[in-house]
Length: 328
Image (tube, rainbow, N blue to C red; front, side, top):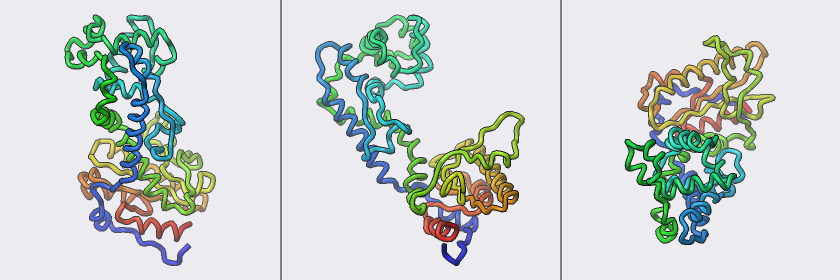
């Protein structure tokens, strides 16, 4: 602990120091390694002249968690199926279209209850049905009805030359990058929390999740049940928290930011009530950055700056270090 108490940034100082984008070369490297590993595993497959056999080989592909792309894996997964992602990437068909239109119709026609594509892998009969749909479904009467107004999508259900992608992996890479771009965007927030903020926490001691000791101090805004919100970083632990950090890095502006402001106010109020009732000094920090917040303007940003003990951003990480040194 140092002797000099860190000074809060004024709203003007904070707003002027916002960054439109935070450099994340390590996350980009993990993304590249993730895509590279998928392509390498795909390239090892041996294909024959039977499109349905080749289809089955692809949908069985899985990838194991490795340090070089750890952040890109699904949360908590030691391995995950990548075969279906390849199939959807090659066809250019979205998960939403499969889930909301095609699967329900196929379930009804065949008396099935398939919830997601990966569950198909467990049933040989289902594999036959879906391999036929994806390799020659452009001629299927049911699909023609479902996609009657989307002939371009219908034409994509004709996977019959997967082996050609082994000869042109650059094309497959572009398809997979597009397919996993949404996951990359989702992982940006996790990267900020773990790799930018979390790496500065002394000894890396922090936990994530809801904080039960705050539960009774929330003032509910509705009569319905509301969950105890997840907190991004609880330092050093949930049992004896000293510092709580919420992180919001966004590149675009959205209505969700207003709701986040309401949640932030409720959390800070609960922390203050908890501190007063228990003679504690739990500190609340907001990490806010990105073009989305710059676009919202100083007034909206000011709501977050004023509803916490300290507000920090990427250009003021030294202040965060000072806070840790003083309060921990």
